[in-house]
Image (cartoon, rainbow, N blue to C red; front, side, top):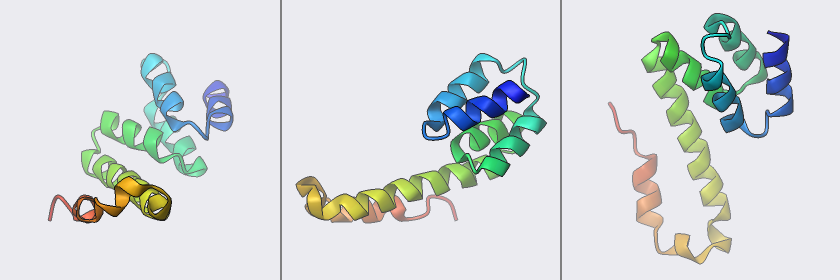
Length: 101
């Protein structure tokens, strides 16, 4: 597990790489321990992936929605500098609406 913790430390800015590592070694890393590490380090994408693999699909979906909402917020912050977002205001609003009720 030390190797996985080091991977999380070194690649915390690129969570997709951590998911690739988890997928590559999925039979090697114990899910429960990896979940605890990702929770402790606040790594949402790898945590969502692990929750999905563990059968906690509702928790995984909540994490994926949280990730998407943070992307939308980032785009909104960039909006004044990117002309394409000026004309797509309604599209951004539609993305933020909850899909499931």
